Image 1 (tube, rainbow, N blue to C red):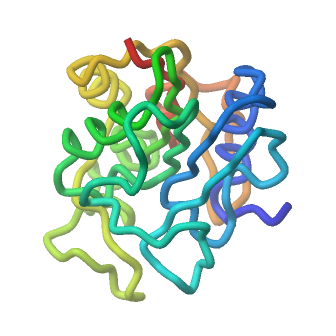
Image 2: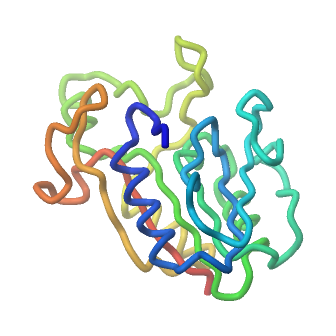
Length: 202
């Protein structure tokens, strides 16, 4: 499996969360799947990848800022890796996830951690971290920029407001240019690069 350059540990954690749900009989949608879906190789009844960019060759091309192209309560697991920070209307996005999830369905979600140790250091020296929200919607290399920033507390509150109960929280350590500097077991979660959560629709 080809993993994104800066997300190997995050992918592994999210895949472990999927596996913990015994997904063999589940319908899974992988939202914002890009060219390297987190769900690659997962055994499930059905996996549907969704992305806004046709060149990423998803199962469905869709604008995730609008209504999702799925029926109510038609999905068991939704995976949303590093997508929420690109969405203007986060509550609408989560309401759509809740709508398509069946009773007791699960959401596995990750976002960059705005209060990670790296970001704190950058702020200390008066710099905006490279992947923090900016006044422009694209970065200098033409990648879509982040619109909102999240921490563990911020994401958990947002999920709670939209009637999701967080079951598990995880971070992915501290890395630099794709190499792990400090493994996750050595750091408090709030210092780590990513916020990763497994939540249940209630």
